Structures are given as structure tokens and as C-alpha cells.
Amino acid sequence: MSRVPVPLYTAEQIRNRVAELAISLDGRFPAGATPHFVAVLSGSFMFLADLVRAMPRPVTIDFVRMQSYGSGSTTSGTPRLLHGPSSDLRDRHIVIVEDIVDTGLTLQTLRQNLIAARPRSLDTVTLLDKPARRRTDVPVDLVGFRIPNRFVVGYGLDHNEEHRHLPYLAVIGA
Ligand code: 5GP
Image 1 (tube, rainbow, N blue to C red):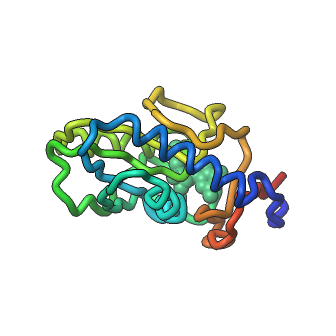
Image 2: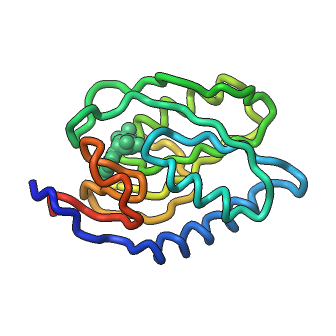
């Protein structure tokens, strides 16, 4: 697999799309409501930071950590919630902020955990969606970019902890 990242979406394309997502997301909540964003570590940290700054209303945030892929680029085992959330989700408008939905199994596990906390509503926004690899029909409300089955890095996403810092999205192994 080539380790050289090949650009996929520029920083400007990402910025424009994140602004659109923020407006769409804002429209899902009643006036005066303060949605609570639950971001999945570590890949979504950059997306979360840009998304909250693009939101036209105040939001609160929390983080969860799911079992990761480890050092490879293929999925392994059943996902588990390893850490968080550390806030009370009951009666809140929750927004799961994901970097990428691939098989959908991670999101499905997370949703089950958060639903158990009895939120008022539960939406999911993901920066990237790889529908070709889906193994469950978990609902995804808002998608930044729908992409083919490629391994993506940059803008928070890593491969063996590399490339997270890139301000753009790129493909490796192309
Ligand atoms: P899923 O459970 O939907 O298969 O996997 C979701 C998680 O797998 C993502 O949150 C991410 O950590 C990882 N993942 C899936 N595809 C990619 C990819 O193309 N690039 C990177 N960096 N991570 C990925």
C-alpha cells in the first residue's frame, strides 16, 4: 500500500461543506434549544472544532472513545464503548459527531449506548460516509462527503497515528 497521501478534498472544500452542515444541523432544533455534541475520539476532533464554530447557536460538547481499529486499516471484532460520555444526556438534544461511518458497527454500538441514557433526540452527523462497506442499516442524518471504498487520512483521521494533522483529506493506498 502506498503511504503517500493523495489529496481528496481541500481545506477550502471542507470549510464550505462544514458551514453547510452547521446550517442544516441548526435547522433540526427548536429555537432556544442547546444541542449537546458527542464527538468520537480521536478522528473527529478537527471536524468538531470547525463544526461548533460554524454553528449559529451555542452548543455544549462531550467526548467518547470507541474501541479503535488498532494499527491496521481493516475492522476487527465488535466495537465497544471504552470511555464516556461524562455528561448527563437525559432529555438533551444529542448530536453524535463522527469522522467516518464505514461498516456502521461503531456508530450502531454508540447509538445503543446513548439511547439508553434517554436523550430527547439523537442525530448523527458524519464528515465522511463509505456506504459500500456498510454492514448495518444504522441511521446517519447528515453526511459531509460520500466517498468510495478508500482509506482516508488527514483532517483528524490517521493511519497508525500519522497524517492526522493535515488540514485537508487525502487517500492512501490509492
Ligand atoms: P465502522 O465501525 O463504521 O466500520 O468504523 C468506524 C471507524 O473506523 C471510524 O470512526 C474510523 O476510526 C475507522 N475508519 C473507517 N474507515 C476509515 C478510513 O478510511 N480512514 C481512517 N483513518 N479511519 C477509518
